[in-house]
Length: 112
Image 1: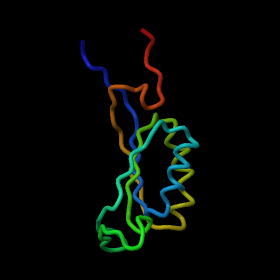
Image 2: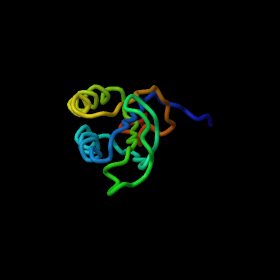
Image 3: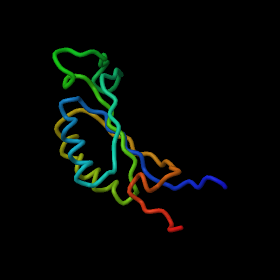
């Protein structure tokens, strides 16, 4: 029995923790089947170095929110994130990925 891989899209959103609910609410509205949040991250970018540490709350640290979705959900997610990125710093990556269990990501597999 060989493993069958299915094409999907991975979206990673890097934002200040205070915007977590905006992104997760959007993912829920477009019916992404799940997401992973990695908090308290460090990095260097357009606005300089951001150190990973809790100042007064985790809302002030950077977070990565990752999801894997079928291609047809990418455009609604991008459209929903546009207002956030017009007003706040952060960025997003969209990559081609393959998954072995497409039913976990909102696609129905072939019927047995």
